[in-house]
Length: 66
Image (cartoon, rainbow, N blue to C red; front, side, top):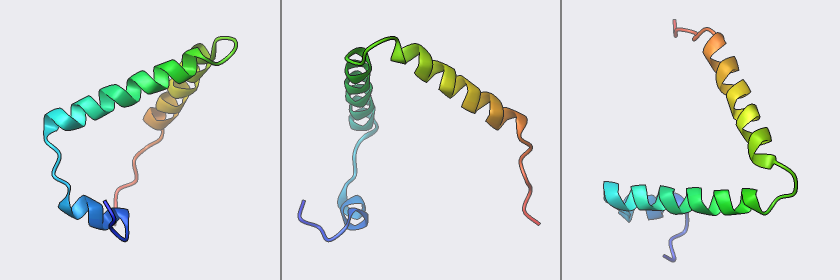
């Protein structure tokens, strides 16, 4: 867009919820395609890594601000 930073672009961009959803769908499709092109079974490894990260986050107590 020619703006000096992404912050300025965000100031003037007003995507609709539908446009945001379509963008995430396209991103997900691109990620699926990239994962499918990797050798072995990277999707299983990725899912295991995400599951472990989520489990770790759930087990960690949330600190309350003082």
